[in-house]
Image 1 (tube, rainbow, N blue to C red):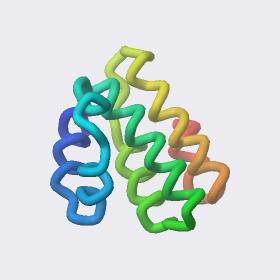
Image 2: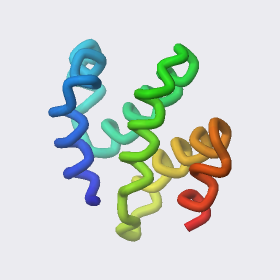
Image 3: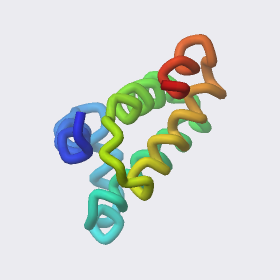
Image 4: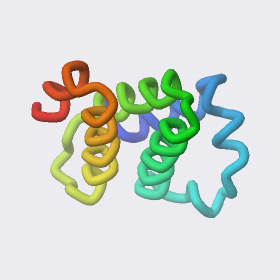
Length: 97
């Protein structure tokens, strides 16, 4: 999956759209901003005991293909580490790959 596909899917998702609407547009200007935003949301959902939404974001973000730009890959690594922290047997292989 490409980053823009992820962003479109997440914006159209009924479970996440109420949360994304609360965030000012200035924090969603670029794809990079949006990736960092999704990583933060994943951690917020985890700390708020909304594990279903956390797992959903982790699965979506780990599905992104590496396109050679490490700036965009940082948020994917960060959410992957959260996934390993939550459930290493489930996410460990995906993060290593």
